[in-house]
Length: 261
Image (cartoon, rainbow, N blue to C red; front, side, top):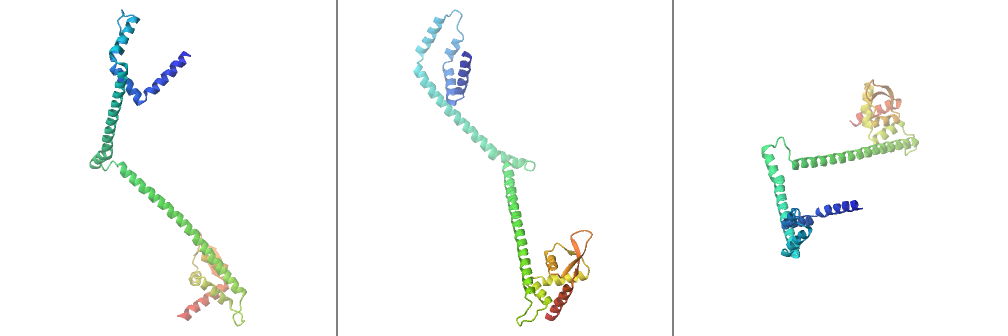
């Protein structure tokens, strides 16, 4: 029980002394009453307990207890004020040295091997902004690619549907059968594929390899104008043949060019 009391008292005392005011007050009290403290620990062997008590009473008879407390409080506040003024003055000097004088010294004496923190922060901020802009550009590019693919599919489906409708209705205004090649010619022309088909047919006749990744090639296959022949040894290119309809349409396209010229 006594041990726990002493431990608790010691912890409470240490906690109180950490307070700036109480710690300073205790320090002031020790300074102003050093004679009493020194005497308590250095009485002569001839002094008895009664003599010691009389000495302490005599000390406080000549030193007002209330007046001593007031003076201690006043001096404590004065010391605290002076201490904080000095600390803030020191902080001002440190800040000026760190933020103004030190950067100036580094800049003029060792600017090549040492980079100032402010410059480092600026470079890092610029890098982060560029990285954010790059990520936004990549995201925007991805959205555009998806949109382009969607539009290509819509165009293909529209052209295919138009071709199917044209094949279903092969009658002109007079009720006569329309030529199938003429229908294919109009379908390619409306889908902006006629010029591509004409150039592709020339390459096919030269037995050149064609990039099979071009979606327009798939469109021409779906129209039955070209067919797969063989594949290259490496890469993404194949060779193709013109179907019978493809040969007829190629002649029709050439005739149209010659005719317009």
